[in-house]
Image 1 (cartoon, one colour):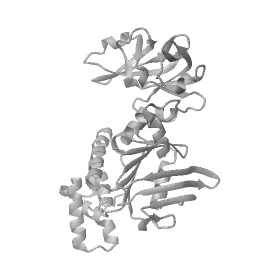
Image 2 (spheres, rainbow, N blue to C red):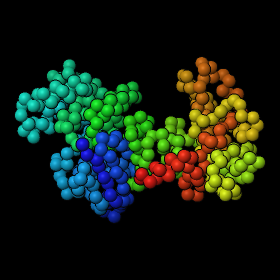
Image 3 (cartoon, rainbow, N blue to C red):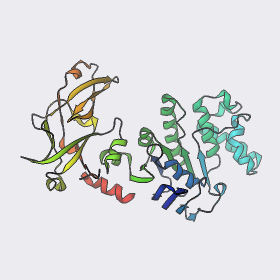
Image 4 (cartoon, one colour):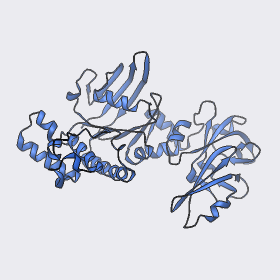
Length: 375
């Protein structure tokens, strides 16, 4: 088992630089997810690890070996692509075994390996079928089997679930997570879906514009985003962001949302010294309280619509002129949600970001600082 290390990794296409000096250490047996919007450089980074893209500058090491000039076939990695890339004229067993055959692995060993992998992935009953006779989820499992059978040092996944419907994506996420727990192989996974990132990763690498914004565990990123980009990307629905000014309150700093309301802010030393500063207040939709809290910190909301989701509902409105979403339990009835006019929020759950730079102004528990150091 081996880890992967990226040092000052750069990719240019002519005069255009798309990856800007990435530093990242992926530990042995770790499952790391690169996530970000389209065009952020995550797939390009993965392809440089695989050797499918030439490295413009910097270093890629797999284990203790520098692989910048090593051919893809000699890097001991296996890649699973968005399109399954199966051979339509070969059956499942032949597709899984293809990589072993071209390496001239003995026939008995191929048969044993294919049988073992098929058992792991639940494909034993489908070994004689052609790809056209399989569902999308089964085809993706065959593609994964072709990677697993090689026993590589590193698995590379390039948006492998993008072509599946919602139900199959959920099922395959669980299967990939079980598979990683069973095999314990270092894995790097690329996706634009933050739900996939949250559910699969040991650590998430959030990328934007060819740079790393933050690295941390799913809950570190969810609870303590380092900037407004991460706050708006991680979470479903994403964190609400409302412009405000820090003012001195009777019991500590508060965020003034125009003339309409004030929100008590966390008791962080940096915020006491920031009175008068323009900020963006971040509030998770799940952290909004519809009952209790008294008048202090009561925030008016202009209700727009209620989106029922069964046991939960999303309440859409505007606060301080900004879009605002509340996520709440329905308890089987949404009629009372159409009457919401005000809400409360626990000050300890409020995040504060500088409006100009977008950077977090405080980090409860040091989680943001820790994530910065890891990146």
